[in-house]
Length: 189
Length: 189
Image 1 (cartoon, rainbow over the protein chains, first blue to last red):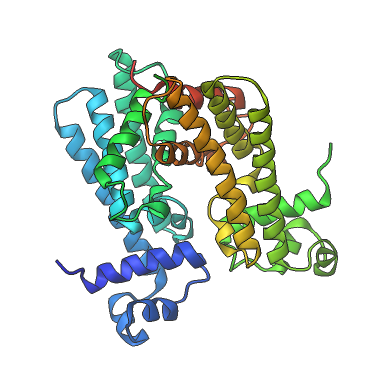
Image 2: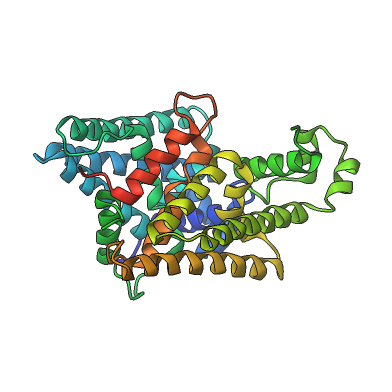
């Protein structure tokens, strides 16, 4: 299925924000990138702040939907955390906008959207950490610090976005399995 | 020991590049941040490209010096990788400029410095991956993909820079030990 114009604008914006920085990216740059007249671009988004807000909010909702699905399934804490790591890997590979939203660019959101976004993110983090606590209590996980573990796991997949290109010798599935293995079982034999 | 003016400029620049983006940061912003007249700032650095170049090159040298030290010591691959993870954690916590250099801002280096920097980085990565290969061959590590493992390890500590504040309940040493435990031994009990 061909991507909608809106999705194309999203992705082009995410790439520009990464390469030039949010503040140095203009609506003119964005229009050029997606081959639109500036006037047509404004029909989709009144400002670049709106593009950023939609990227951040949509991605927050997407991660929360993934969390909701994981929580709804019966399963051990270990299975839940594994599903969530897979979710992070998949979104980093498949969708350039997810990383924009969750790494750096959200800093440039304007209020009240910044607070709303941070609240959604905090909600996601709390639920992630609650599963870790559950896993420790059940004796599935080592007694790690849930905050350190969750941030280390989130962070561990951040490079994918810069590096992964479909069609390389390493498939998305291999990548997912390898990273999951490293994080869940460790490196040492 | 009080930080030299140059170090203060470095760190202020790294923070501004992170918060505003490199391209949106001006020498005037930087002068203001460190409480200098623009003219005095120019005595230290002729341009912001020079600040970025020095940050990137110094940090590349620092990581390579760490690598050199690790390689010079007798020890198992496991000990070497552990020392290098500790190095990454320490530098992320202690020095805001290291993360600027290695995460995003190096993209803005100008040639020939961009190529020179990427070569130093590649050299570091190759040596890191060679230790992983050595560890797999020696039966110390699982048969992981060395490239995926190295990038996952580098990436896993990236959040520290945004989050860690000295004086929190979690000390730098605790953080180092926890992260090392997660990456080397995994999460699962």
